Image (cartoon, rainbow, N blue to C red; front, side, top):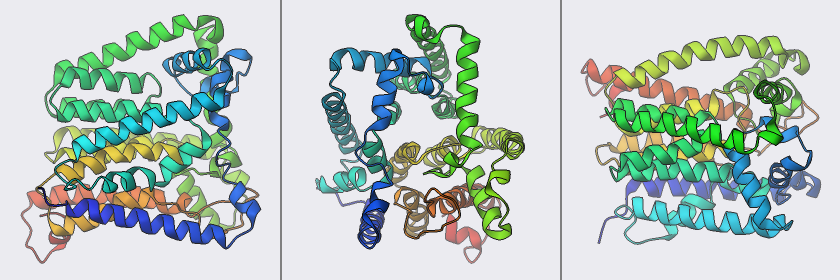
Length: 399
């Protein structure tokens, strides 16, 4: 029998506490407030599957492979999207449960309830479940990437990651793990598979997408249409929105001005520079894989100008890697468990009425958690190389 891992106990405890506080906050408010979450409307699922019937709005949201999957689901659904959605979510959740159980079998002492909490008590999963977004499919591929990577089946790992990248660009950052660990063949496999899969999907759906430049324009317009409007303040944890929210609370400046295209352009330039620096840092500095995965995943989920809460599902990958690392100290277990898991708890406790759409504390807290986590990992890496004394900051962050 294995001893239950301390980290998973801390993480599950935080998730339970977050859900309990969230339920209490919901029960103390008006019924209309609960409905504002659009839970169980499954609207995103319907919109995505209807893209071939003249609904062009969603065609800038994903890459072609995602729409190829949507077309297949639409064909096998025979028009019954609700049943199809329930089936897809049930199957994916079951597979995710078994994958996590396999990865963490030595950490839970056969207490499967710990895996159940890890999945069902996290807000990104609940939010994704309610909206009906196909992001769970993307996360499933990302999780398979890590599963096969952990099993040292690098070509399969690369193939699974290429499926995810072919749906959305941001998982591309995870491919850097192959370079960090000198798995160059796997990296090349991932890139080539992504290109081929994207081209195949685009050609298969050419009658829908049309000219490639038209598709690129729709993609650009989709992003601008959300990041430059109040829609960006709905369940968004982008660092850009965090900065804008903080500026607003301090200056009371017109929110429309703060969300202008100029602000987005300035942010994009700065974040590209920061991203290049962080990528070089991850590639060059020696550190545990879970720290690399944490930095890369936080870049994936928080650096874009718009990033809705279901994308935080990806944080399960560095969290699992962190749990599986047996070389962390008790202080690390507490600090990093808090920093990572707080991203996964609901943050809609108070009503801050500064826009007509009900905001949430996550607009500010999650970007701050992202910045703090990345900074602490960077500092711990440099401080470790300088061999500081235990009484210094290093003692509180890294062993």
